[in-house]
Image (cartoon, rainbow, N blue to C red):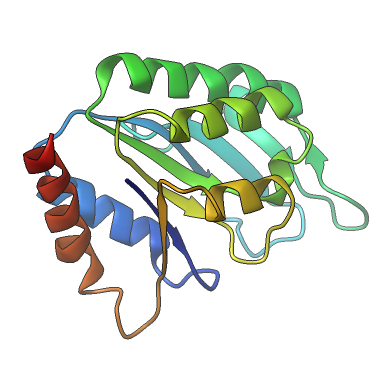
Length: 175
């Protein structure tokens, strides 16, 4: 069974993932997406990197460039190449796959989407985030029979890391 978090922007979903993985003695792989300190600017950038590594703010890691006026420029080819590579590496080397975060920006990155959805059918536990107000391909994540969806709130976010870590540990005992 996989766990995907959802909830309001900046509610602490990534913090829950970070704290949960810190509680587990597992080889972790997968991907993380993140903004630089310019998150509030209309010209902000979204980056992708390995869930194992520190945040990198290099040109080659930019997957979305937001614009002051108009639609964001999404680099589908980076999701489809580097994003898929990160998932494949995680499948080969990890006991837990992190997918932080899945949303509408990847709506045309079909190879990336397919790799995520195919990985849901596997047996390696996934701890991920699905953007709350996303639609389309992310509905497949929400409705997948192996996915437990948890909404992060101010009330539960401090309790979730231990609860999720225990849940994942119990999965190990069932194998």
